[in-house]
Length: 307
Image (cartoon, rainbow, N blue to C red; front, side, top):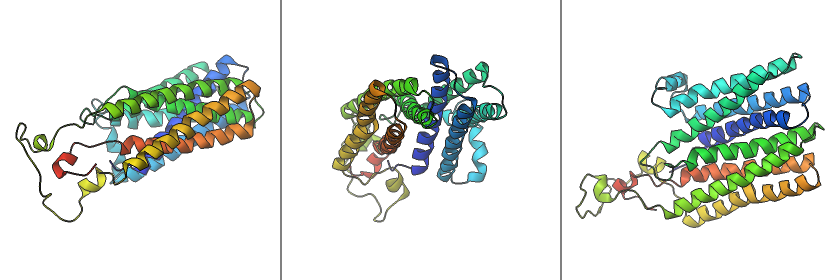
C-alpha cells in the first residue's frame, strides 16, 4: 500500500509522547523525586508532541470538520476508541503539567491514569490495523506489541536525554530505554520473519468470485491510472524495501542499543542521548513507512497489480 505520511507522523509522535509519560512515572518510582519544574516541562513536551501528532492526522481526513464523527462507532470500532482515548490521554498530560507548574504535585492517581491512558491508546492504535483480518501483514498480535514497544523505546530515550539536559539523574531512564529498545528490536525482527513466511491472500479467481476456476486477466479494463492502483499499490522495488529495512533496523535499534549500553556503563551524556533519540526517531519514521508499504492488499488481485 502507499503509506500516508500524516498517519506515520501521528503514530510515531503520539507513541513517543506516550513512552515519555511512562518513563517519567517509572523514573519517579525507581529513583529520586524529579524536580517539579523539570517534570512539568517534560509533561508539556509530551502534550505538545501528542497535539502535533493529532494535527498531522487531520491531513488524512477528507473532511476535517467532520472529524468528531469518527468517535460515533466506539462500541465496535477501534478507530473510534482511539479517537476518544487520544485526547483523554493528552488531557491527563496537560492536567499533570498544570498542577506542577502551579506549585503542586503530580498525584499518584493521576500518574496511574496517565500510564493507563498510554497503554489503552497503544492497544487502540495497534488494533486499528491488527483487527483487519484480510490484511495478513497486520493481522497479528505483534502489531499492537510493536506499536507499544517502539513508543516505549523512543519515549524513554527522549526522557533520558531530557533529564540529562537538565542535570537530573538519567541513569534509570537510560537503562529502561536500552531494555525497551532491545525488546522492540526483537519484536520487529519477529514481525519481519513472519512477513517473509506469509503467502499472498486469495487469487485472481477468488477476487471475482470464481473460486475453483482457472482465471487469467488479460486487461484491467482501462489504460489510465486509478485511485485503487495509486492508494493500494506501491511502486517501489523489493531492493529498496530491503535496504530500508536494514537501515531502520540499524538506526532504530542496533545503534541506539549499543550507544545506550555504553552510556549505561560509563554514565549518561546529554548530547549523545539527544543524538541517539533523534537518530532512533528518524529510523522509526522509516519503520512506520515500511509497516504500511509492506501490505499486499487483496484488491490488487482484481487489478492484477504488479508486486
